[in-house]
Structure formats: C-alpha cells, structure tokens
Length: 52
Image 1 (tube, rainbow, N blue to C red):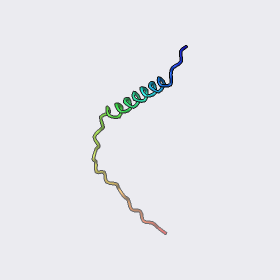
Image 2: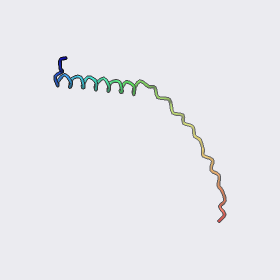
Image 3: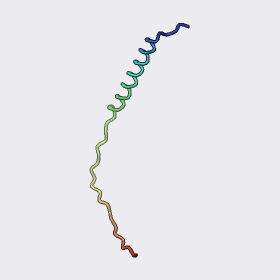
Image 4: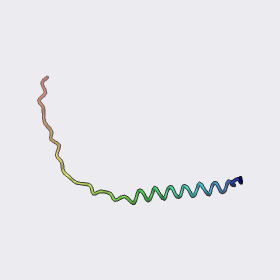
C-alpha cells in the first residue's frame, strides 16, 4: 500500500478544515432569528410586613 507524503496530509487537513468551517458558517447564517417580543411585563411585588 503506498504511503502519502506529508504535504498531502497537510492538504487533506486544510481541505477538511475549510469544509468544516464553511459548514459551521452556513449553519450559523442560515437560521432565521425570531423577532424578540417586547412585552412589558411588570413584576408583581407583594410587600410582607416583617415581625421581629
């Protein structure tokens, strides 16, 4: 079985890295972000009398 030269392994690594990065970038930018709902929800604060 013939062996690969080190430069061919380097080329193979670079091709895999470029493919991986391109796939990750496409997955990041292909999703459509949902619109953020700007609901103004007021927190209900109930004051409790403290007995010391």
